[in-house]
Length: 412
Image 1 (cartoon, rainbow, N blue to C red):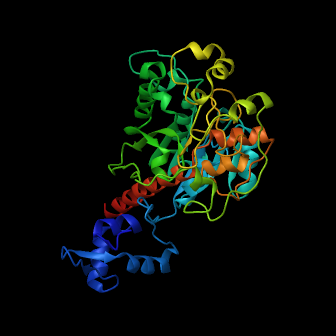
Image 2 (image 1 turned 180 degrees about the horizontal axis):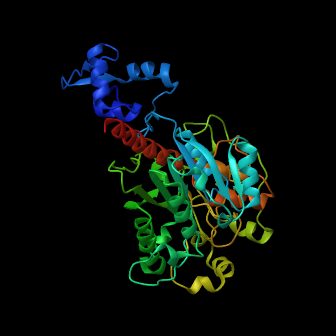
Image 3 (image 1 turned 180 degrees about the vertical axis):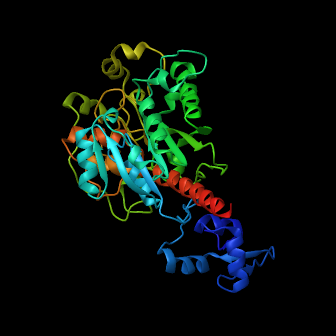
């Protein structure tokens, strides 16, 4: 960990402008020092931690590349909220979730159980009008499914997307008129309908008054998540705003399965016990033979043929089949059903799928975040979620944008 921080690094860490830090230096409020080797004016890390702990009760860590303090109270309207992975992450970044919409009744129960103060609109998004939040929300977020559009002309318009959930996302953004909107989706959206679906979405956001920042696929392992999961992020900035949005900085630190399930940097205790799915005896006998980090090709050939069936003779690695995760690697992307064939995620030492709480840890949900419904429903909610820590880092990038936007607004 670096002993000294530059002016730029401190500004990023604490969410203050360089000008503010220079003024504090002149006033003797927070004094910079001469770095011994370069003679540049820098700040001692422990000095920064002590100074800002008084104000924020926050300790700067090596992984907090994107940390920033909200300069105002920022609000979020979350659509397609699921079990709250993105919402919890945004909350950890300092954003207040004032309302959420979700159609799945068990996910809604999960949200209400954990956050009774959140206003949850349960049901089909088509049934709700959000005009009451017009100009009262700072960011609208949502993980809409990718569905093909009806192409009426060369440039796709909002009406061409009727009947799709992206249409509803765009409708709500138009009703609410936030400074920024964030859409998240699977990487597959890039190639859906040969890329036409994504271009259609960008065209629609343009029509309703939003410039789309060049989209990015964020890898969860680069944002303090012990899982090889990817999410496509689409950011829209209202056209009357010139403030620049920047994606969160990826961390070089990669966490593994051990970090997820054992006491360490990510969690302060071992994973709590919980119920979990089981393999049928026939599958268990096969997976008993697979070593850590191994998969079906590590089985004896005759067992490979029996287990794989016709897939044995087809091309492709199919590396997710009969896969046992290793302690020293990030987990493969979790699915909604932990025991289904072709996407096995077997525990490193025991021949079983991950339990519900292990699933939640891999998605970086806090241990006190409980899930409603049957075990199958809980797996589904967790498997569909945005990893909480990824949501937090995206949240920091939103806070940074909003800080800059409202600061610039005051200067006009």
